[in-house]
Amino acid sequence: MENNVGIKKTILKQLEDLKDHSFEKDLILSKHILDVICDITEKIGREIVVYIDRKGEVIDVNIGDENTVGLKNYDKRRSDESLSGIRCIHTHPGGNGMLSDVDLSALKKLRFDLMVAIGVKESSMTNAYISFLGVNEAKETLPAIMGPYLEERLFRINALELISEVEAGFKQVRNLSKANESDEERAVLVGIESEEALEELRELLKTAGGTELARIVQNRDKKDSAFFIGKGKLKELSLLVQSLDANLVVFDEELSGAQVRNLEESIGVKVIDRTQLILDIFAQRAKSKDGKLQVELAQLKYMMPRLIGLGVQMSRTGGGIGTRGPGEKKLEVDRRRLRDRINDLENEIKEMKKHRKLQRESRENNNVFQVCLVGYTNAGKSTLLNSLADADIYAKDQLFATLDPTTRRVALENGKEILVTDTVGFIRKLPHDLVEAFKSTLEEVLYADLLVHVVDGSNPEHEAQINVVLDVLKELGAEDKTIVTVVNKIDKLADKQIQADQPSNASHTVYISAKDKLGLDILLNIIGEYAALRSKVVELVIPYKDGNVTSMIHSKAIVLNESYEEAGIRITAEVDNILLGKISSYVVADR
Image 1: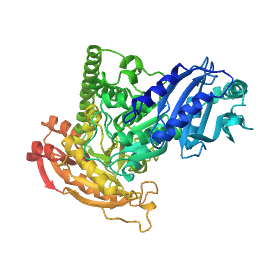
Image 2: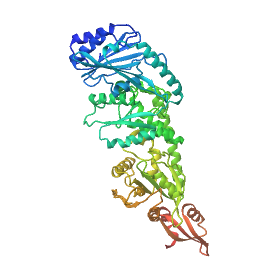
Image 3: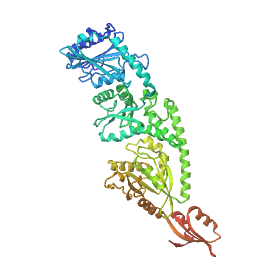
Image 4: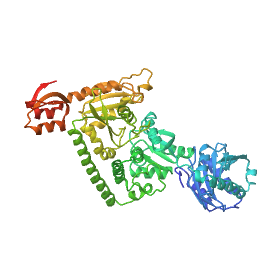
């Protein structure tokens, strides 16, 4: 029996004795049960709940707190189309037997045969209300309420006939709607900062395919080792989940495996944290082989230290948010096999890294100026690349719309071509395992000649997002790269301009609308200026005997003009500083 702290042993004995009690099965409850629960409710000022099966036998008794009683999930269903086979009888101190939203939600969620609330005052029943799953004109199951009933009328109701009629309607609706049932995840969000901080978590949930029903915030310095939140807030969360019929709880902080297990046992629905939610989105978004391997590696590294705590969670079937990616079979392995799989993935990613290195060396040999777009997720990087390169890369107003790096050639006004690469977006509390797994992809940042930091100027949190991006760049070892800050989405601003914090190595700020192609000419001019700093136009005369030098210039420089003279081949070319050092003895003029 729960919630029995401070209750006299004689009272506990009275309640325990009810478990041996049985009565005529067609009654809602017996007179003896009614008298006992009303008397005890008056004495302790708390709710009493009694669970009764269809044989008229009491299967359990429980005590609630001052506000509500905790309802257990008892189930004696014969099939998925049946009711639970249990009726729930509970008291309401203060005399009002009206059913609460929590009562009705529990009825729907736990499929009780009947939910009966009895108002108690001065140790006697004042009135009673009965609720059951009725059927409306649209053939939907919704809680129906009968009452109020006085004691005499309550005992004249034939419980089994009522339950039989209710179940017949319930089965009909279940059979009609079974094929159309939605798998949508309905979530309650939990944070420890502020409600505003949960806005991004809501967007992540939406991106993953879920819907927010409500949110709970607890300000506490020390996190509870067992449940992360305090027991009072946990009870509030449990009631909220029950009243809203939620099937998922998402925490904005990382949870241990033990905390997830404890929370699920207490709340009765699936619990995931922010990291799992982000990993789930990455699992949905990854399209290339590289991306899928990197996501799987991050997921397995996340699961590795949680194998013990996530015992129940890892045996789930049916999928849903937090379970996509490597799949059930790959997660239900022992530590040794899991380590072997991680090792295999790391080796495959190393091979991909070598392949990318060859691609980069090829671009470097072609003397092409390389620009890398970085920024917070959904800042508009893919849209900017589409506008610059007249491309059709997938771009959508959602978090992590694209994961795989995409490179396109972009022509400057002087006719010179540059390479622009779009990278995965960053986010607050980006999982460390994800950064590690995607480092081979994010190395594009390290080898770029220039970083273009795209900022969502319409987002009120843009300054905090700038800091997040700079922190991730520092973690990657790219904090000293030259940065041009691009404030995007000015089309959403009334004055078309905002103030953006500047990193110390950002020499320019450009205000643009990538969608409407506003300000792109200014951005391209600035990129062109940086590209010009890396190269120089020179005029050379190469003696005919040094044909290897001529070949090197053709392969590593941009030849603008070439003519054949008596002294040798006269070449006008755009060369970088490295090549210029090798051929400086042939230079006859700078331009």
